[in-house]
Image (cartoon, rainbow, N blue to C red; front, side, top):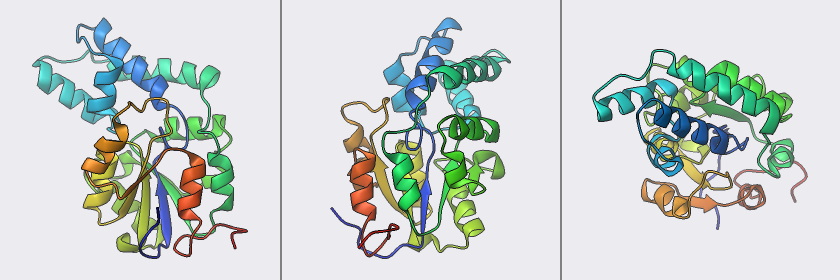
Length: 231
C-alpha cells in the first residue's frame, strides 16, 4: 500500500476522520427526520447524507419527499449535536499523534459550519494542531461533492491540487477530491462506517483505503509525504 507521487499538502475532512462525530450526528439526523414524519434509519443517513452540508441534506430530503422540513430543523439538530459534543465526543484514536508528526502542510476542509468545526476540534484537543488552517463549506458557493472547497483550501495553502492528498470518509468527500484533481485516501475508522464502506469509497475514486490512524500514518510515512522523525 503506497502513494505513487510526491505531495505538498494533506487535506483532512473533519467529521469521521479527525473526530468520531459522524456516529453521533447520524443518529440525531435519523431521529429528528423520523420524529418529523420522514422515516429514516441510521444506515439511510450514512448512505445518503454523510459528508454533505445541512443545506444540501435539506434540499435532498425535501426533494425526495416532496414536502418541506420544519424551518427550525437545523437549529434543533445543531443543539442536540452540541450537547453530544460536550458529553460524548472523542477524537479518532491515534489521530492526534499523526497530526503532531506530519511535516508537510496540512489543513481541514469540512462540510460543517465554522462554529461546529471549532467546537469539535477544541473538545477533542485537536484545534491547536490545525488552526488557523480550518476551512468550512460556508467559504465557497458549492459544497461537496463539488470540488470547490478542496480547491479553495489548496489555493489558500498555496498548493497545486495535483500535488495534494485528501483524507475522506464520505462518498461526497471522495467525489469532491477526485473532481478537484487530487489523490484521495478513503478512511473508515469512524464509528459510522458500515461493513461495505471500503467498497463504496473505492467505487467513487478513492485510491486506497485506510481503516485506522495507524494505517494512515504508515501510508503517509513515505518519501512522498514525510512525518517528523520519520527515517
